Image (cartoon, rainbow, N blue to C red; front, top):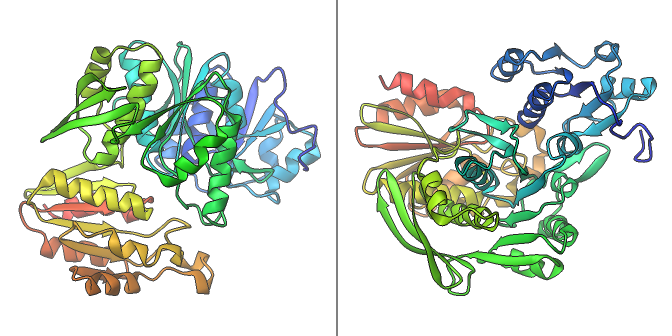
Length: 476
C-alpha cells in the first residue's frame, strides 16, 4: 500500500475499529479510549498475555491471537496499524485486498482523542513520560479535567490514559517512527498549543543513523509549531540550543542559569520529600514539595509548572497538586523493602538516564550502600555505540551488577555491546563491578550479598525476568 493509497484515511463516520498489534502499551490504551468513546473495538497480536490481555479483557475488548486475515472478516470501518507491524503482515495484506480504511496510532489518537482540544506535547530524548505525567496530574488537580495519553502508568490514576471533558489533551511526543507506511516521528502528527523539549541526544539506533539524524527530526518538529504556540526548552542542552533558531513560536527556557525564564532556586532534601524554590523571570514564583528524587526530576517539574502556568493555573494550586503527585511506575519506583533492603525499579537505559538515575538515588539515600543492577536491552544499548560511555555512568554506586543482554542475537556481530567489556572497564576505573550471564545468577548474588540498609537499584526498559518480585521474595 503506497503512501498515496486512498484507503490510508480515517472515514467521516467510524463505528468499528480493529487494531493490529493491540497489546503494545500505547495501542492498548488507544483501544480502551476508543471503547470508552462508544466504538466497537477488536484487536490482534502475537503476544496476548497479562497484564495487557487482562487490561483489554476487563474493558470488553476482544483480542485474537496471531495475525490472520479472518480477523478482519467483519470489515471494520477503520484499521489502526501499530508501528511494530511490517508491510507483509497477513492482516495488513488483507486490509489492502478488502479495501479497508487504515491509519497509524498517532493519526487515530490525534483524530479521536485530541479532536476539539488544544494539544500539550512533551518531546525529548529523556524525561518525556515524567514531564507529561506531571502536567496531566497538575491539570487534573486544578480541576481542568484533561485528556491524556502517556507512555507510563501514573500511580495517581493507575493508568496511562484518560478521557476528560476539559479543553486540553496531554501527550508524550515520541520521536520513534510512526508505521511502516510513515517512517517519520510520531510527534509530527500533532500541532501543540504548548510543547516541552527536554533534551536531544542520540538514541533509537535502529531508527536513526546518528545524532544529526535525530536533530533533523526535532528540528522539523520545531519548524512546524504554530507562531502563536509556546515552547519550553531546557537551557543546558547544546543540541537544543542549536535547534531553537528553527522555531518561529514563542520560546521560554527552564533550568538553572540566571537567564532562564523558569529557574530552579534553593533545593532542600528532606526525605521522603524534596523542597525547592521556583523563580520566574527573576521573581520568586513559589515554594514547592515533591516526592520525586533527583535534579533531572526537578527539571521535569519546572517544565510542567511552566506549561500549567501559561494555562492560567496559579502557583498555590500547582504546589498543592505537586505535593499529591505519586509518581510513575518504573520511574524510581520502590517495589518493596525486605530486611531493611530497599528494591527500586527504574526504566533507565540510555547512558544519560542511567547516570542521572544512579546519582539521584545515591544522593537521596545518602550513606546507604547502593548496588546498581543494569540490563542492556534496547536496540541502542545492545549496540556498541555507547560501549565506552556506559563505563562513566555508574560512579556513585558502591557496586555494579551488569547482565548479559538477553536479545543480543538480534544485533549484527560487529555491532554488539559487550557486558564483559563494560565490567572490565568499570573495574579499570576502580569500581566494584560484576558480570552475570542471566537473571538467576544476579538474584543469587544479591541474596547472599545484600545487608540491612542497602539500596538495590534495578534498571531496564523490559521486564527483566520479573527480577524485582523474585528478589523481594528471596529476601524474605
